[in-house]
Image (cartoon, rainbow, N blue to C red; front, side, top):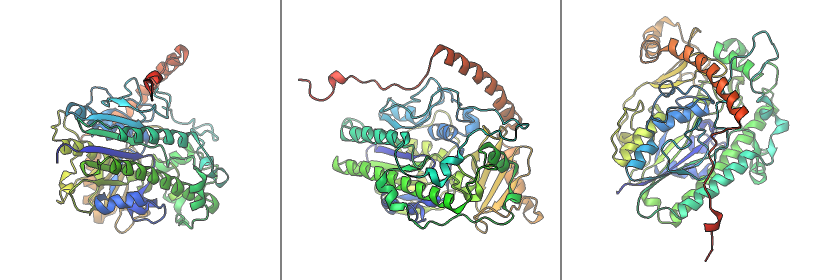
Length: 484
């Protein structure tokens, strides 16, 4: 085929463990399921960082977050790092972004020619936070718990829904008038099913009585928590606010399922327009998410965790002229940029740390390589890594006891095998990837703290000056619609 069009649809905080398309018949996702039926479904795909901004810096560049120097939701990444949008632009694509990408700093395009709407979140450094005051037992950073309690979940409307409606409208409009003289790369990024779980009434009616399975809580669950887990329990105030009661767990899962269904219907509308415009056969469609969501698993909520519900993501690629396949080999979101460059026949100038998934798209086996996810920022403020290789998953938090799980025999990640002499060689191998490889743990830890103080100076000055980097869409109403 000639250079194909590319439609990449990203949802926010969408764990695959609730999606029909990923083998879990909870949220009905018929459009994602149809894509999986005709395309390639990567069943063990991971985020490179279980938090929005770092994950998206990796998604754009094909690099680890410690390479982009993007640690938390108040961090930028360098504008001189080429993104897939830069490469595709140079290869003749019209590169367009609709919706959330959560770029921080003055560069609000990072290679895209234009954005169809502004971002939903602020572009400054304001979402960078120090650790909590250990002397204040009531301190918490984010009071997220109310968003996960039954009394605040149900039919309603939100800024997030308003934003996704605008994102969808602009995206459909673009596809109907896409350029005929060159290929396009359109990224459509929804903020749902990220909480709050306020749901359009028709979707809430579908799920308000849904019988969804609840997480399993062993009697000794609290004793199994790592230092990393305990930091976020306090960070979110979960040691003081209840989210484990069945009424909260079922409500949050119903809300999530309803919003995932909502996003899936948005995907269906995008695909319908591709069909209407005769674009489907020459368009690669990719569906994914930036990271997952714990949804009460292990008594935890939100992301930031390196456990499966937070770290795993859906990844489906509909590549024309290839057969349906499921790929179980672990892969990462950072594998998408080199894959896009391969699709377009572009050579990398700076070697990416992700690897191209083109062999899988051609029906070939993927080499088994370590898949790495990392989290260093708010809530923990020290280097933390996950390494997945084969069935083994290793979690390392600097200066804390590690965790090692066999996901084939222990998918719930309850049996920590770290320190087991029978698998000492496996643990040493995975530990070495983190501690003896490319990652400078002492530098990362120092850098997190050094930049925090600097950003606070800039934040104060920008507030006093009234300056901001938020993207403003250029529009000329006098040239819209019928003016002659």
